[in-house]
Image 1 (cartoon, rainbow, N blue to C red):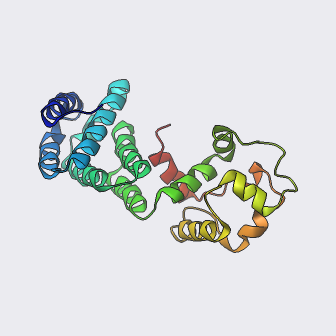
Image 2 (spheres, rainbow, N blue to C red):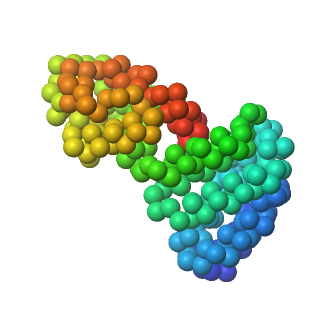
Length: 225
């Protein structure tokens, strides 16, 4: 939908009102961010964030942690994260930032420190890292979603055939770098040194339980489901 400036502002104002019905405190933060979002692209990203949050909160309004969102610490987190969203060019990361905030709003036991930790982790990774983390979170679900065989097809296969089918855009060098990054952040178990061997004669079961406890928690924050 292509809107002119006036139409876009009208939509934004209406959507902001919807969000404010769930989180009244964020009004000033949204106004400040929108004043800084002079570029159409940034304004569009902010609109998408507000619309998505409003939609999700309307679906789960009974789960909103009102004490959590009424604290000034949440307001600070919301503003800082929103600014990350409008500056982020990668859609997958914008969605992940939004989901971290959403997770905090709808959780009974989230802490501001914990949310900040998840945001700091997300700051350090890119879309390719997110792709791998999604795979390790649930290899079976990942392969099924991408129409790849769950049983057979990989046993006895060469490294090249498995890699090309599962991660066609990554060569071995690229994949090793990505694994190394995630290992350094302590999100996955140590695997980079044995990567080529691991991708020979394997099935999807070989990649279960490869996330660390820290990695498991992070992926739970960035996924909506």
